[in-house]
Image (tube, rainbow, N blue to C red):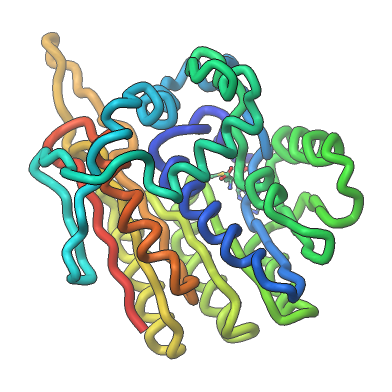
Length: 328
Ligand code: SAM
């Protein structure tokens, strides 16, 4: 059985990138009149406590959402204007320069957190930020009556929490929760009835085989339903499978003649260091990315504005930076 529990990681810098991107996607895709089917292949527990034992033990939210929100002045300042080129890197510790307030995509993310944390919304005090939404709750917030959300989660404890959290929303059959393998289950939902779908594939990559399964699953999904929007989160770590995954996804999109976007956020060096006693210190997750097949045309501009702010606020050393590429 898996040992990965997203509660340890909720609100970390990878969630900031993933959930800001997810909100921008959901906001755009739910504007149309035709029904949208949203499929979340690896849903997690749905809601997390930021003051719970898991989060406090790992401290990851401190390097993510709390760090983002703890410097309001920095956020109210500068956004670097991205060059026209498709690839942009803000490294070398350079702080972004120019443009007031939060980028719209980050503002939407913060507004969603405010909606779940009324005391935080009222006071602006991050000590009152206690509830963090996972991808299912983010997706659900944007649905209208005609849309459907299918959630898959294999871990028995997280499945139980997810089912309970979704039940509390009282949304009936609009949201379905299943304890099934999300990679396999996806096949049965494509193509969707109204021929509009967004799929989030966000495994824990706890097993090395997840990297290969993501690539195979996405290739199969694009074959079954070429016009769906497919969203993959991936870790950027020194491991060949991790390095290969975005390259494989890009090849698959190009071969299928689909447009694609790849956004990556680095917050620190991936190098091992030693403390004063000579003990090796592992840096934790230094970077992650979001690969989107068939992105809405608005997504690149949204991320081009948000990523420099993430770098400025979440960056921990001179390796911090972002890349944003697209094609097709
Ligand atoms: N998407 C969630 C979010 O953003 O809030 C986080 C998901 S977490 C990174 C990955 C989840 O996938 C874990 O809760 C894990 O138990 C679950 N999982 C692992 N393998 C799975 C599989 N084959 N099918 C469905 N869920 C799986």
